[in-house]
Length: 111
Image (cartoon, rainbow, N blue to C red):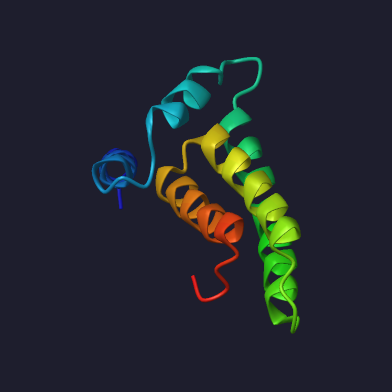
């Protein structure tokens, strides 16, 4: 594929993520922070987000495997996950974290 086609495909994919509600305006603000002095800023931030998210998801999975659920601990993990998701504009993940936290606060293990 030519470079122009690749750029267009990237632009369409990016727009699709906004159109489907996966990303919000926070991601645009993150992109605005990228400049010539730090041309890989967004990539670095998103990479850190994915690494941290993988760790948090593992912690959540382990906490859910226990016979007795520690809703305070789960809520703490989800609070971290929601905050980091919000900071990069991961709108749908943030919304799911909010719902999960509501279940934790209600002590709803089924939720």
